[in-house]
Amino acid sequence: MRFIRHLVILFVFLAPVAALSAFRPSDLPETSKWYFHIDFKEMRSSGAGKHLYAWLQDEVFDDIREDAGVDLDKEADFLTAFATEDEGMVIVIEGNISQDTEDRLMAMGAASGTLDRFGSGSEAFFHIKDDDKHDHDDDDDDIDIEVDSFDNGAYFSFAVKNKLLVTSTREKMEALLADKGRIKGVRGDKGSLFVLNAERNLMQAGARAGDLGDNIDWDSNILRNTEQAALLIADKAGKIAIEAQLVTTEAEMAESLASIVRGLISLQVFNDDMDPEIANFLQNTNVNVKDKKLTISVTLDPEVVVAAIE
Image 1 (cartoon, rainbow, N blue to C red):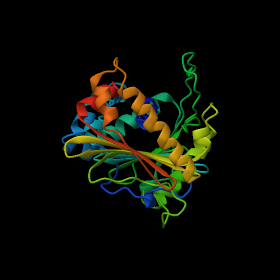
Image 2 (image 1 turned 90 degrees about the vertical axis):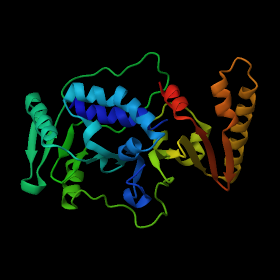
Image 3 (image 1 turned 30 degrees about the horizontal axis):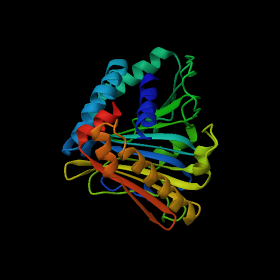
């Protein structure tokens, strides 16, 4: 179960900061509340992405290898996570999932005494329940965010070749196995979560702001007036390109937010105490508005991005 928890941590930590080379809205269910996609394969092969990948190796993969004996560094090419209101959370890891990884996860589940098997043959899957109690209170954290999780245990399966499927409900696992691990996405873009794209996507995430509002314990005028948000991190000519987009309820709100962002950037740029790298980052940040869409973008040296994450 600690392996499953690490996957959730990977999403939670990176998403606030993408795809089988072309990740599309049709790769997500229409009722998706949020999504996260990371392309490890592209990250390993791109000049800028290698810096982010090295950070993942040190901060995430090593912990998973130590705790679970599973080497995502060698086996994972893509990770996609999303959640819907009715079907809960889903994680799909694609890559060369080894027999050793399968055996280790099965052994961990058996050792916990909470491993149950369902289905058979090509549709076999398992349920594992974590009975440990964990205290998540943090006196230093003034923002209370509840993230979709596996509070009632996780269902997982290796039945689809080169995929590890993890779901929070039995019904969703059965549906995935019936469709050979394929996600039934929307047929058109209308009403779906929007997805950003670049030539070399590394990570991306998106969410409906209304769904976030139920889980975030603060009164935010920006959140109330935002319909969707998306973030893309890509490799652009050896640099890290970061683009964030907000779709607001009214065009006037998008213009207002753009003015606020530009004002904050202007104020900070002339701060004599500011680190030169941060000042350079702000000076190169572009803010654009088109109708109800606000776009904030910047291109940075990968070393600067990794330093900021650390």
